[in-house]
Length: 159
Image (tube, rainbow, N blue to C red):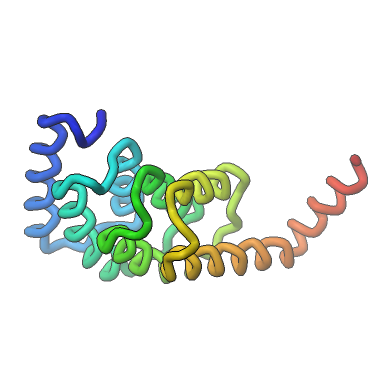
């Protein structure tokens, strides 16, 4: 389904009300699932923009550390979004500290989800450049771990 479908847009309107009126904090998994679910949509419709607007405070107030899969799935859901829009920039700004604090090693699937999610983003956008910088730092941290170094050495030996 995509957000061009009238029924989907109606559901998004209801979800905005539910998200905005909910007093409970969203878990990192709930945030990840919400963003992942946006993958076939684009932010040209006000309903998608409204969902993002409602999610930003929930992301900011989440005090859980995002797991590596949650990080990958969150960005994967942004694959059809215009990175220059205000709503997407706000989501990225809210997600950057969550991604930075992820202390799990990112596996190949998560890395590819992250990169795939950024496919329609432009490096002209400050938030996208900051996110890429954070991702580079995470990759560097992974390479520095002894387990990763041993894995890389095994890979080199097999070539």
